[in-house]
Image (cartoon, rainbow, N blue to C red; front, side, top):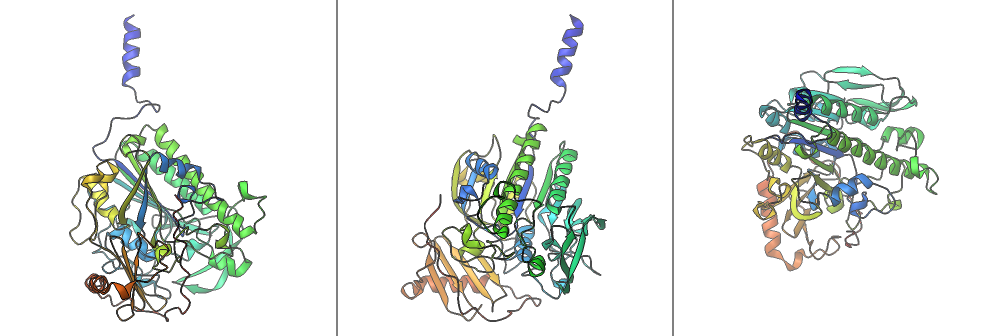
Length: 487
């Protein structure tokens, strides 16, 4: 009898993967970011052809944000805003650098979310695409030098176009893969991209596997995982070389659809990503840490029209105007789903207006560590914890972009202003509560609002010698969206 009692006590005390662990004072944070995924590319945001059952369920059982924005409308600058908590008028990396990768790198003085969480005792990892510092001489922006204990993936954005590369980075060392790559014959951003003539190792799968391993080895203490996926970004060099930049091992459930192969690839990539997120959720539950872990999912900017696929097939921007490289809503408004079982309220649609820069304050708030003083960031922890009435609001959000002759945008409440080119162009004004598709420019009838928005634009912009307008303003701007909400 005594032996049975002892064995019973041991079983009660032993850790069990089927039971939740004791809550941590500091929750684990997983931030998952897709690449070039549109506001309307998920089922829970109105998508009808591409299946995303995992993310749809996370939205139903968590918080779905309707008014959340990327840091910018292209990759590098959006990630710079995310990591530093500073908007586009303040953050250091303000665009895709093109021929000069030395300016597309964070400085030693830049403080990242990972650095603050590391100071709070978190294990930190980046799996996927970085884009804020390359392996070049005197570079200060490598992930391991910016707060990440572990890094696996791509440093260079052009390298990240290729889903079957010859190598990936493991911390600061190259890890050779079994793929054979045909170079494109020209370098951009310091890297000659290409496409695989022998496909063996699919980078997305490798990145997800490393994320799984990091979670498994970090489960007993607070951790921060930044999972920066490359799906569904196109391999632009592959498009030029083969006509198909939507690289995926198979088309899965879409193989028999009457679509062209690039559209099948686009859909298959997104569904594959969704399935892998489900794998991570199952792992958290198995390890007993799901209720200690907040998972957030978003995209780095609006949808793309690259890779040879036809965006009209899937209506990826839903009711919005524009796409990647636009500061209209379709270029910067992105999904955000927050899932935190037992803590975050279930089935909530939030109309809070937030953006990438808010990760800094949110993470610091959750970790109990001070937020840097020079950020443009508001913590959304009150919403995540079910206290939306205590949520602080931004006075305004700000963006600037240097391609296509340059442009600026501001959102204040329901007002949205866009100026092309920066500083000198006429300001367009939209009331998003009545005109989500940005079809009716009402600047002429609201001169007082236009004046205030111009003042915000002037206030927000701090000059940066590395970034200057390029090209000319497009003559044919994107047509307005239909403005009809999809959910």
